[in-house]
Length: 545
Image (tube, rainbow, N blue to C red; front, side):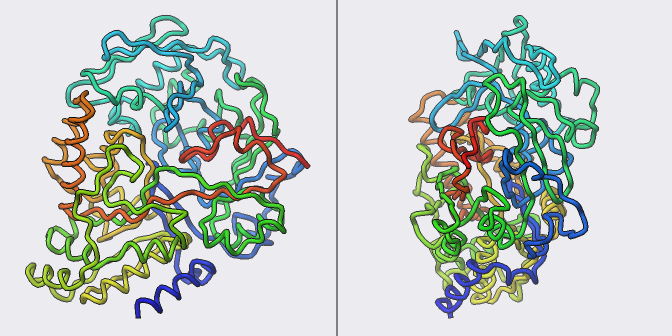
């Protein structure tokens, strides 16, 4: 039966339009992912309305159109936004002091740093940067941005990276082009904690009290390569190049994020030349005529973890949670979703397998349905029904969800699959009182294990498992305060084992992204493919007709 189901799922993944009977949903990827459906007619605009006039690609000759599967939304802003397409929009418009990726530090608004005591980090800033309205960028903007991120009431995505039980990172202006950050304790995570925070203009946002709802989020003034000039909810975001961009005027005049949340619609648009790029999974690539349609593919790792989380408030018995996990087979899920091990690694903890702190000395929950049934019996549980949320417009999650339903049925557990609107699902997951027992999602965090604390500490902003486990919190605190790498490795080994034993988190995949691009778009390697944002610097893309 399982082999037949796998074959059917492989067909489903390559023709996900059959999931149109399911309403789409998605989770947040802190990065947290989201998705929702539109009609699958390629002649209809991305908003789903054939009546609406779409001006997004009026000048296609000097326009790069990128099909994205989620709506950044009018609440997109530097402080609170943490989903993939919000952050991709922010990366087009704003700049950080520096990016901290696997290849080290890449400088943007800052040029260098120094530290004397591993507590205070002093950064020199560029003195040749202007905001896109012509105003000068200075240290005041940096101090303002980080200070706003540290205010608890603002619900900043990087709050936990700047505010600790031991104290708050102190931000100080030394002069107009020098700032310092003083940590309350020595930590090897400092440089990563300060990175990827995009600087916003104090002269625009200084009187804003609600970052999610204001007049400036989609009327942007930034230091990045582009500016938002038009946003139609559910349809597109249009950017024009920032003539003041400090790294040089972008080659391409206009960029459009075209919101096409149905994968079949996006693929048709890519093959017809209506859009220039789309992030695909292997099964989608297989059904495209790559060479015939003048397309290129770029496969790259994001250090992403795709997961299934269990809401502990709804499933409080640890034995029941362990039974659920022993019933599942992540190998089947990955084969159904990604076809070949060329496109994914199999993780067994919350860290990606490429992390130097990763260990497999944990409970892997290798499928054992007899043990699962025994654990349910020990817990005295029968006739269990679970509600599972997932992204119906995501072919990988659709396949995974159907497998979970099948495999749990084999131990007597009924699964109700629910694919809801992405915004609604994200809102529900963010509430401890949500009625989902389990949900699929994914995240891309940093390089250091401490960056994952915002997902796994008990009261963390994105802990959608809603547990309260002091041992886990204590191990995170020990890890961030330990400067000896060998001792940190021991701490994080124990932490990974503890989280797996608690059985509320089931890592499924660490998959590559595949960007499919029309060959008229050149400079992809120069723009550099990076986690979350797609391009580290989109100004380096160019069009060759």
